[in-house]
Length: 198
Length: 198
DNA sequence: GTATGTATACTAACCAGTGAATATACACAA
DNA sequence: TTGTGTATATTCACTGGTTAGTATACATAC
Image (cartoon, rainbow over all chains, first blue to last red; front, side):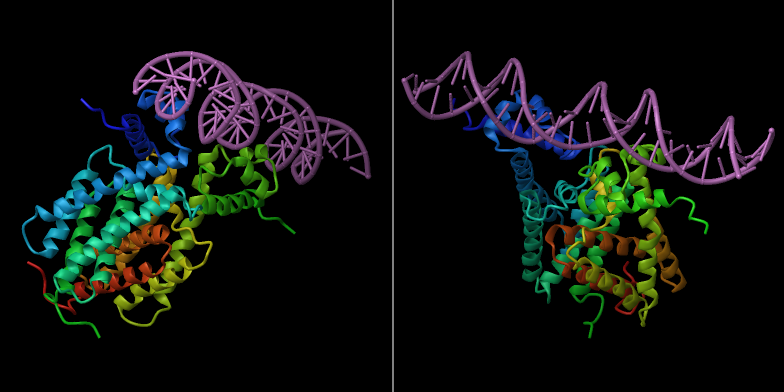
């Protein structure tokens, strides 16, 4: 049976993900990550150039699964565009009610590293959010919405706002409030609720 | 000439504010704060019980001025409710374009301390956001909006979302996009754009 | 015998908080 | 005016612990 090419590296990233997400980047030492992965720090430094490198790998590993989850929630909901987008927020609210939920790893990392604009972790986080925005924009464009980019950005703002507010208030119902706002904005853009603004 | 009662404490808080806001809580040592304030660490520990205590003082000092600024922007703008609220976002966008802007200190601190739910700094941040929400809710209630709390929460979500997104993308125009969304939501709630949802 | 991977043991720096001593201000008595 | 006690405010020097990263040697595979 052929083993996967880099199981060790994978195991390190998984250990790092659990610790970095739950405790924060700066609170977790490289030694702790190595211990959780079942090897020594020196071995970890054989696979990763630096702690920053490991942080980048942690975020990169979250990128695809996170987006896939949003797409899944969108796809498996029956209804029109407003309802499907609102479903993303409703499902997120369910996740956020788990005790171990700690917000969005990308946003928390960027907040922790706000003084390092060129840091790779921030670029990865920004790229992640842009992928989500792009997907929404394309979806809205397909539905003939007049300014799909603006609407996609507004939904992104509500999404990230709910991450921040729920993290601060420990009240997941804000996520559903954000979902209602998203639905209202989309319905308005679809022209169901009114006229064009002048 | 009677000196102010506690100039030293004030000076320490100002030094801490500049450093904590620009560099982050965990990146700044107590020694650095003391040096910036022009005294030794031991003196700082005479005035503050611990670093956490200093962090709490830093956030408490931001609370009132921040809210006052929002109220000022709201008050000095001519127009209806949607325009006045949108003005907050427009003014915030102007602030966010300054190179030294690093987002919302309350949100960044809470992101940094996401694993410590009972931490005083998080309670202070939550109280700050609640004051803003309360002020909006009262303002909306005066205008006869049907569900003023929900609308206030939606505006708060847009505000904090724009803090997060602008910090990540370094693109202050998102703040104006958030302002447009806020205006749309308020106009909808005022019934200018359509009917009540069922 | 060479490339890949792992471990032990170390360095050098950083950092929150403290012990012990000292300086300053001011109230009050002589 | 001078002396004395006390609370306030400040400093130097230190401890104990943590941490990113490394020098060196050892193992295993092919």
